[in-house]
Length: 522
Image 1 (tube, rainbow, N blue to C red):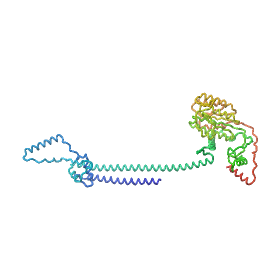
Image 2 (spheres, rainbow, N blue to C red):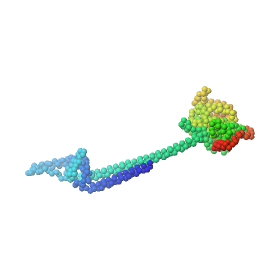
Image 3 (tube, rainbow, N blue to C red):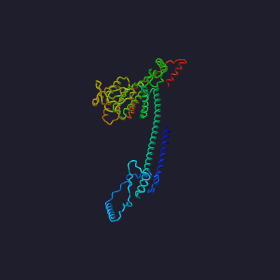
Image 4 (cartoon, rainbow, N blue to C red):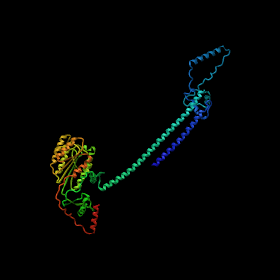
């Protein structure tokens, strides 16, 4: 493509160069003709090279030889009358009548060559006209011929300049076309590379279970969001104060083990091989996978139930507050489950209504309408009051006042701030009856002091803490409150030995066991 444009530009340059050379030759010829014209004797018929120029000059309508003679003045008319009177007297008294008086010497006669379209004169008429011209008229004719030659030279220069401009414009168009073709080729190449990379990435994400195809579109899976949440937790953990460490060990050891499904890759070391193989055969599978993997998991002394509630009202869309809340809650979710794999973690999003979300729905949620704090406190009370956990915690993230409430018939009302606040405090007093319970109300910093007053009243009614922070520090504040939570201490007895299933005998069984161990270990 580039070679083609270079060839077209080269052809354009050759044509422009030839045109410039031709114009230069014509201009040089005209200048030489002008010098010759200025040396011509216009009292005689010039050479044939100038006949056309002379003919054109003689036919100029406003030339002096084509204009009628000017009417004589008063003095000239008196003199002419006196001359005629003297001539009459001479004729009267002379014996012999004189002939017609000759034309006075030095009087110029008009030639009157101007005519209609197509008027021309021959060489003989041109010679006769030149002989009849006076001195000033010959100079006028010379200037007219020189002016016509100079006008042709100027016209030639203008034409040459227009051709150069047209050639330059065409060159610029070619350069623009070449640049556009280059950008288009680069864009097409980049698009192909990006499409190939996207296809490879989609294939790898599907193989790893991070995305799935639904209704012709790729949707995020729980595995991808959980992986992202772990990365968020690691990032936030590096920002924790030096005296805070997130432990991955929860509660005291009881020595009691229960058989349950595999939840985390770290539990493969406690795999029940025989039970998992039996489950795989019953499911019609040839190999063990995560869906039929069973492990022996120790029952800890402490059970945890955490409720993570966050405000998703319309004001949370300002200043990336909603995104900060989602990231902070994802990190806190992973921190709770990492320390207590059996923990119950409920995520509640509330605006006018309350919605229980999983991790995928949490990451994809959008800002909604008004803030119904009373309804989310009611939902948290229903969840925590029915829980049998020994450690119950509530984390409430909001950015403003209670703006809406739900009446006894289930209708949502908004705009009555005093009623919404009273309902929120009523639900807070109801939730405070659940024991044990640790609550943390986090208010995203605002310029309105009444927001902090309302949040403080709710936190005081719940018997919990109030934290006022910037959205960028929300994750740190939640992790610090979680790490410093109290734990229930219980007497620990010696761990019992893991029940081990009898190992199959024979070389074939040993080979199957080695293959199964390698598959699960990978």
